[in-house]
Amino acid sequence: MERYEHGGQVYDAAGRAGDWLDFSANINPLGLSEKVLRTLEENLGGVVNYPDPQAAELKRAIAERYDVPESQSVVLNGAAEFFYLYLNATRPKRVIIPVPSFSEYERAARAAGCDVELVITKAAEGFALDVSKLRSDCVIIGRPNNPTGNLIDAEEILRLAEVSSVIVDESFIDFLDVESVRRLVSEKISVVQSLTKIFAIPGLRLGFAVVEKNLARRLNLSKDVWNVNFLAQKAGVAALADEDYLRRTRAWLAAEKNFFVERLSNLRGVEVFPPSVNFVLFRHEQAGRILKELRREKILLRSCANFAGLDGSYLRSAIRSREENLKLFNELEKLV
Image 1 (tube, rainbow, N blue to C red):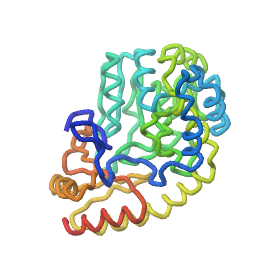
Image 2 (image 1 turned 45 degrees about the vertical axis):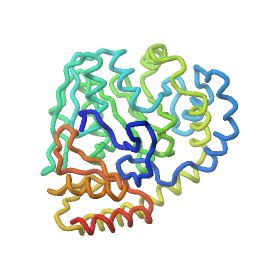
Image 3 (image 1 turned 60 degrees about the vertical axis):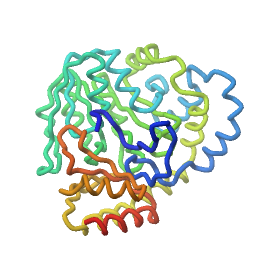
């Protein structure tokens, strides 16, 4: 695998999407909400115009949904854009990244010319994080972390911010009924969130960050003026108002996560790392063979071979609908 390759690789060499059952990307299996689909259909003709460079309607929707000041928000072409934008604008000399974690943290830091230190957390310790070892100009942390699913406490974020600037990636936080750390945003703490995963719109690319007011002004001047396209802005406004969709998502995950982990734990030779969110990290000595055989059945899992701190024996699986999960387990049970 390439060092920064991601899940969701459903395209062939000609760019055509195949008919895959994709457990490699952690997208909400409820799919597009009816409100978002209707909004996209109603606004398709609007693509003849440039998108609003201020994304004013979307910023209001974010402010109302998450109770954050519009003056502190930055709308994004997916959460990944923030790491490049922030690091290029602020140019920290040294960046610490606890790993395993989302590879775009490292990629963005190196692209900005930062010195990067990867601090490896250990499977034997449940990938626990010791924040006392993370003193640096900048630290980037996932909450929940991808691929381990670990959820660092808000108090630990505050401890870390005493000695470092901290970027907290909460891209999966809306799947959970837990409090965000957006309330902690300050000159030392910035929070970024994806909207593509929870609302199943990764093809549109959408996210936002909440940062200190002066930094927000600086980042908004640094980004591409039309970084969020017209349809993504409209879809985001509709999605953020769809409370029923969010309730159904959390109810699905609360039930399906327990079922998924129990079935996975009962497979011979599988070591499961307890998840907090909609994906599960696990280990099997025959992971390479499992991946290969599942591909024959048009099922994709995420190899973790290119996650720093892991090797080819680790796999990550999204949690999908009951019907889809049963298809996966029917095949896994044959293999292990």
